[in-house]
Length: 199
Image 1: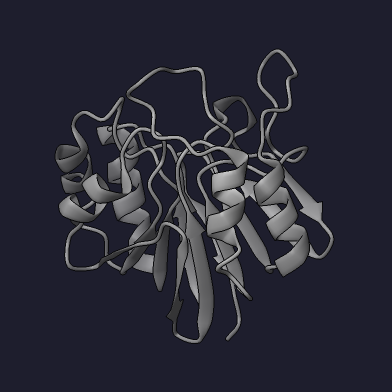
Image 2 (image 1 turned 30 degrees about the horizontal axis):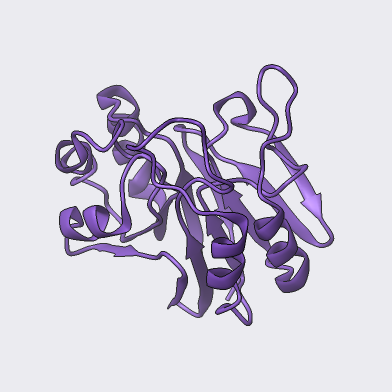
């Protein structure tokens, strides 16, 4: 299965158009959160992606809630937040929001490490783990060099050993990759990232 994955679209028309054009080559699209900005413009942001040529699995970022994303999702979009799905034999588990809690204020959709750990415990196996936030210590550094990823997500990645652990959230680490055991971790960013996953 050929997968096109991205994160942190943040309502960019130019980036959405590029993703829609690229999707003609994809079997599945994965969106790792932050489709809009500060809980505003979500429906318009998803409309920019309405031309995607493949179904999409998405998690909410900290810029939109799970309920808001589900309400705005089109018929070809599956929203995961503490749950999983299987697409063409590939098991995908998703967890959205900022983990740990961000300093951004009341608009930001966040989880504590304990809340994230509880939600991730529902997953007993996955080929692909999709989270908005990165795991602690991998693809999670700010421009000041601070590691701001999630220990709960790192622990889940170590436990589950998915083939791919896809994330976003930390803009300064877009495009950064690493490994946790046998899992390849990628902070996606808003450009086309391609993955081949055998079923």
